[in-house]
Structures are given as C-alpha cells and as structure tokens.
Length: 116
Image 1 (cartoon, rainbow, N blue to C red):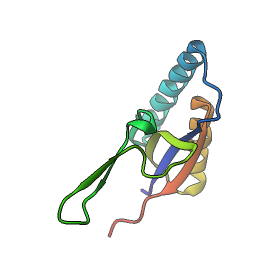
Image 2 (spheres, one colour):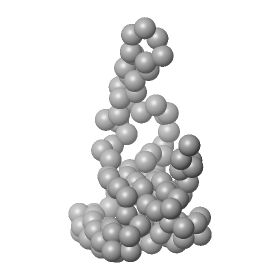
Image 3 (cartoon, helix red, strand yellow):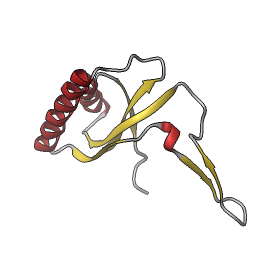
Image 4 (cartoon, helix red, strand yellow):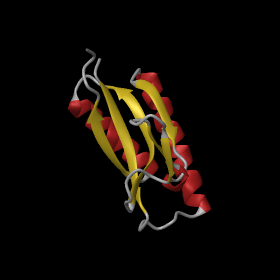
C-alpha cells in the first residue's frame, strides 16, 4: 500500500494558542491517531521540537560540518508529521483533512517514492 508523509506546518506569525487550546488540540490529535490506528493506516507519527533546535550535518567533505539551526531560514516550519498508508492520493488527502482539523494546522501531503 502506498505511504504518504502528512506534515504539519506552522508559521512564526501564527498566534500562540492558549494552554486550554493546546490541551484541546492534543486530545483531538490523540483521538485522530487512535482512529487512524484502528483503520490500519498508521505507520508512524511524531511531534517535533522548534526549528531552532535543529542541527544541519554536511558530510560531503572529509570531515562532517555541523551548523546549529534549521537548514532553511523561513517563517514556516514543520511542527510534526504522520507517515500513513492510503490506497491513493484522494484517501491520503482525506486523512490530511482529518489531521488538519485535529491539530488546527495546515497539513501537506507527499507520497513516498515507490520501493525500488
């Protein structure tokens, strides 16, 4: 079955949710995760620390070079993701719609390359 990356995107310009709103989102995402697991679409998911905690590693030379901070300077950042199985793009988009409603954020859908 095809796998899709559903990535949750936020912006530095987005208003910071209140603690109550965050708890509601956490509960809604937990419910969505349980539903997706019960439906058999679940592969893996996770939330991410802020982009400022990222480290970029460049191992193209003889010594690896590390740089603190995100690879791309942007106001937008990925805050979490799901890797889910779906029979086709339309089904993946429907999963993303449900995930977006749960986490109150935009969700980008990208198919994984076919296994070689």
